[in-house]
Length: 345
Image (cartoon, rainbow, N blue to C red):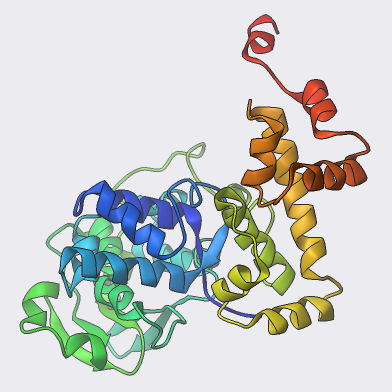
């Protein structure tokens, strides 16, 4: 099942930027409309990309800003993309940076695509979210030309402007003065957002000397962002969503299926073709998180049970005992690291 995904690190950073535009209470309200919380997106996993688009749509309504995608991007910085941006901007020249950006995009945004294509005296750098006409997708397209422009400006200076900016008709039709907003001639595209760059600009060298020890490699970035690999199968995507949902306590099969925009029966069928069923995947995910909570927190067993979505503490105890061979209380006593232990090590 190939659906566009977004790394929770990116979503979490976007929420922080949105806090500058709305009150934190308003942003928390936007997250609640998506059945999410700040804590839920603080991990190292993926969510469907349309969740990101829906967040921008909710924040746009809260702020009363129909061009929220542009506003959000103007208040952000390319380096807000974290290690991904650092990897891209460590390239030897602009052309290499564009290549790096396209190759590594799957590490933060699987299912989306960045392409560099030839067009006479310039190249076209385009972004396709893979969301088509899903609610909120146009907010991503709105801000994307400004974000893409930040890469050439790093190499060529802040006064650099694209030859032209391209956006889908559904995005551009709402702008009264789009060319002023993007500081470039605007044109309609069938899908996605794009900017045109002179070919002669591609050789622009990195203005910063990158030392040998500072040079980030693709493998380093991959290990840091996706230690468990990029989720491509239904099984892996369900595991990633459960990583988020277990922080909320809502792990119903209907909820997980809704995140993937399919029905519960379709989800069960797809898992079955891969040799799994939802109950098994949920049980494994619950158990792994339960172990971490018992090792690293001081929560009572009852809170751990209810927090993981168990209706009864005894159900949690039985499930844990069956997998680990000991009770949660015994496991915590054996593995929990106390502050005093750390001090005497």
